Image (cartoon, rainbow over all chains, first blue to last red; front, top):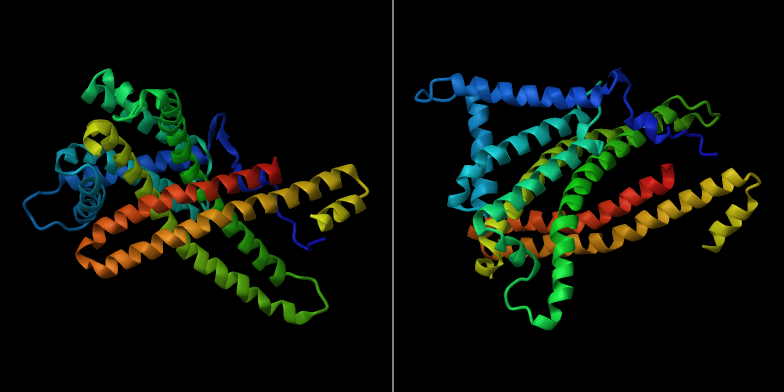
Amino acid sequence: MLGLEFPPINEILRWQDLWPSFNKIALIAVAATVIGITLFLLASRKDPLAAPKGSRNLAEVIIEFIEESIVMQTLGKKGLGWTPFLLSLFVFIFLCNIPGVIPIIQMPATARIAIPLSLALLVWVIYIGTGIKHQGIGYFGHLLWPPGVPTALKPLVGFIEFISTIIVTPFSLTVRLMANMLAGHILLVTFALLTEALLLANTAQIFLVPMSILPFGMLIFLTGFEILVAFLQAYIFAILAAVYINNSTVGHAEEH
Amino acid sequence: MEAFSAIVAQAQDPDDAKNIAAAAGAGMAYGLAAIGPGIGIGYIVGKSVEAMARQPEAAGMVRTTMFLGIAFTEALALIGFVVFILLKFA
């Protein structure tokens, strides 16, 4: 009917297994880990007193970015100890996102829910753990009832706060990352398919064929946009993790 | 909606009818889910630009908060997108 067959979702997202229970998504994740670790190991081998260049320069730029625009903006100076964790989150997510625009690979590993979900659960465990460490068992009291809530409202407020902190937070972290990358991936697929369909159209109206330049231009534009999104999503994931950790270190009492 | 039900009624095959209804529902779901966050993000960014223009030295802080606000608002649109995927392909 449309003259354009959109492939089923499994064809877009499912990569063949390299061997049982290890598919190419997992391969991208492993590659992201290895590349990240290698970059920072190489950088740490360099002489710290000489002027930075090469891998050390890159590593310093990334660390400075994390410190300046994530840690200092949310956790403040006392939170600088969180830099390694947020740095590894950021680098890993970015390196998982960026294959979405690398030719031949063309698949963001975070477009499948497994990686975002495990990262979100990791952040969830860490911010609850931080809360218990800093405020003891009273953390759960602060979590459920912000100070100054009238007793009559306590069940309602407690219920809402419980839902929003314990359930909605990890869910929205997961879905934000996964759906952003999936949406970008499907957009790229759509415009690539449109270009192909117009270019190879078997039609009497021959002027349709050069029109394939239009979706192709959009494809180029979206590829650039996806690079931005890959960076922005990694940044937002890291900064939200920092905000949640900050919330559980200071608690509601000092926040207001 | 009447147009949709007319198209669905024309379909001979029950599978076809199901697919048409799913596609229409998916389109509606995403379209409706995009309205609110669209307005919200526009509001957030507009206000942030205003704040940055008034006080350029606070631009860094405003930008961080802006991204946070966008992230929270956008989540609603993305949940709509997930519903779209579920309706269309599941």
